[in-house]
Amino acid sequence: MAASTFAQKALPVTVVKSGKGNKIDISIGGKPFTSFLYPDTLEKPVLYPVHAANGTVVTRGFPLNPQPGDPTDHPHHIGIWFNFENLNGLDFWNNSYAIAAAKKSQYGWVRTDKILETKSGNTGVLSYHANWTNQAKEVILEETTRFEFSGSGNQRIIDRITTLKADMEAKFNDAKDGMLGLRLAHALQIPTTEDQKFTDDKGIVTVVKGGTDKIPNGTYLTSAGKTGNDAWSTRGVWCKVYAKMGADSVSISIIDHPKNPNYPTFWHARGYGLFAANPLGEKIFTNGKSAKNLTLQKGESVTFKYRIVIDNGGKTISAKDLNEMAAAYGMK
Image 1 (spheres, rainbow, N blue to C red):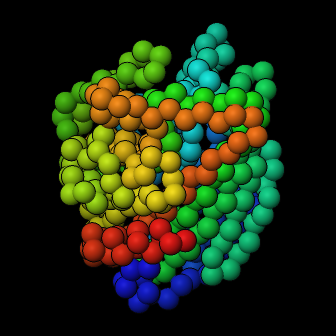
Image 2: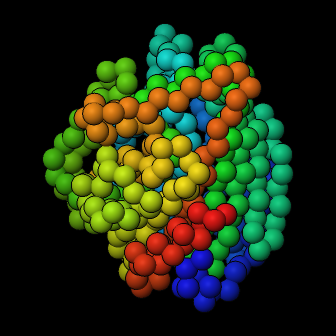
């Protein structure tokens, strides 16, 4: 792991079931870090909200707890999540309360049915089982995910290991929206005054309004040296978004794992605040020059591993430290 990470003492992590509904709370060093929310009403399980070590919330509040200035586009963008836009023709990514009942049959659902493990300690552990289903609750994939949470003075880390096992033939058809997604807080957006239009796999257009306030001041940097909006559609071992949030500097970095399909991943990193790693969106990211479809036969499985690193404290994690962390993570 990076030298700067070694220099900080690991803090105790607490993982406990909340008394309120399908919710598990994760604290680091006695401070709230995030919660795992898994009611079927959300259409997929999420980590929400997510805090930096200084307490700053780094994920968008809307739609669960809207904050002043929050954009209200893409209501399916909640905290941190994992799914895909086109599995056997069903859209898991864009499903939300905003989809009309008459159209719900075109959308998939990730239903968490078992919490397999919760453990507190220097590393907190949360494991769960979920089913990727159609609206008739027929299972296409079984998901088993293990989160490992850790932290030190100015840093928080989430390691996510997700295995998808096919209960029937499962076809991931190359699509733009996937797979590990995170919706950023307002300050982490790249500032723009222009409205933007985005079209999903079903031809539905979403308009993201440009802003006139001075809060957004974020930008991206990838391991390949791409910056700002130029990070979108490019490959890299890691991608980092960073900004001033209040008086502090805050960054979120996602590190890809070399054993993941189609490594290094493409970055579906939008200036308006969607920060996603999608190895299966090659067709649109290369303007049709190549594509990456993935098919699992019944009983086959695939595993995806990602590390999310959240930093604050004067200056954010350097490219050198991220390269060192990525190299160490690749050995895990």
